[in-house]
Length: 332
Image (cartoon, rainbow, N blue to C red; front, side, top):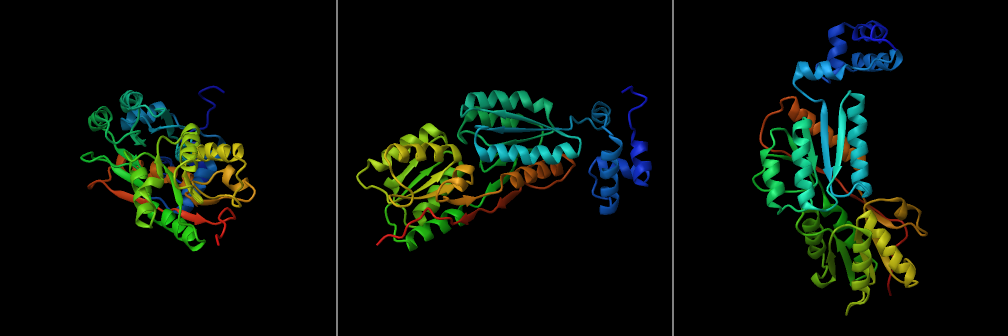
């Protein structure tokens, strides 16, 4: 299609029966637009096949119209869902998302953040290790809005989007206790990130034992090692709480090799929803979050800052919900 034949903003405005300025405000996501006008313009965009000229928009606004997302492992279904949630909302607004993975390596993470900084208008980050001096140095050197995903870095001017681990872990521990379980094992993220500290803290607050906790990078290999260590320990757990979808795969592999049946031989709770939890027979009790909602919220919070929202760093907390299925057996 030639440049002359491409649909223009004027075509969109005419199709939507609004002014060109109103159409422009909708496409730039200004708040001062009625819902009816917004719906009409977005419908017109789809009907006429209008594609915004991103280069021209960037020159006018001094923006890249791009956000960055840096996570530890894209194979993690939660991070994949967050990326999907961010991307979906941004695409509808004519923005782009660049996703990078650190592969659990702080040095790779620091280089990645540094390279993304000049190319994006804001960045969401789930750091490998909150103690990493190099990652902190790079983040503090950015001149764009930063959003930490379930992480805490003291002294960093950044908003936080975190999960309410207390509700989910607390509910699962209460359920296990009510079913007679006392020897409960926890496989959790490392304590050098907020998620690991919070999960372990709530576990201990609800009567869990320190010696029954295994922490590490949320990989399938770690799941295998942690499950093996707990099952071969001096106190064999009657139930496990397992954080991470890849970790769950590793744990289930150990159960298979040892011919352990869930819940006849051991009860199981998965922290984070996954096909493995839903389609296991019986279904595995899960601590569920909504990763796509987290992603959509992350994009919204960053764009608010990019659009000039002022004030000190904000902390937004999203819920976790305990979903019982059939993987916890009553003892006694």
